[in-house]
Length: 244
Image (cartoon, rainbow, N blue to C red; front, side, top):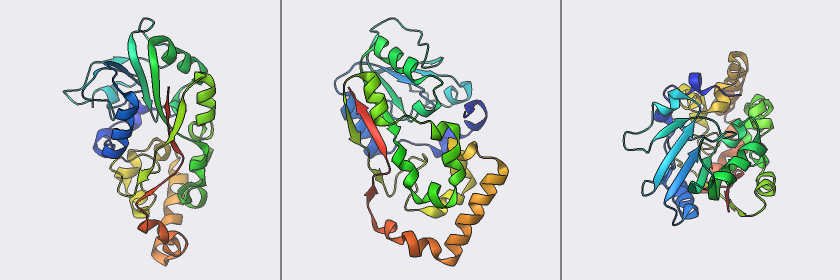
């Protein structure tokens, strides 16, 4: 599993909330007042107009939270240190694939909050060119291979709906699929450092992937096969928002 005590250094420099995705999440949160952000990281996508408490296992990530962000507690999703019904909404953004026990974490979310808002990536994300063609080792990582589907999470919640989260071509957040139309970015060490999937690769596998993609770009192969992506405004890569 990803160790954010190590890979989280400098995370905030690369990972910034995309305003379009943030707006979709904010609409899902609705008129809630008290919000818990689970696996909060540096605090991206936390609503600024709500009373937010964050819970995050890594001190490195907590230390990068903005000064104006709400208080943060060190802890894990599977054992939340709050009383039943403390929050109106519990949110979790691109974190479920790092949880050690999904069922326990979802149960805890439901225990401490009236509603849940969860952004995740569904299995079809791995049909993208990046993981299918150039970095197939990413799809074999435990955190990615065992990532829960929207249907699995909805079955544990026993209610709610799933919304498509389109990823803009110029997405300002540096998560795994953000550069689907900007392949050159995946060769940038700073970009790679902001993604847990790249950070978990062995140096050998990372070098292999970089060589594959670099060669495809230099030869024109990537643009011949996938160049049409550069003209699209947004894309459905399998990111989903679960709303109860």
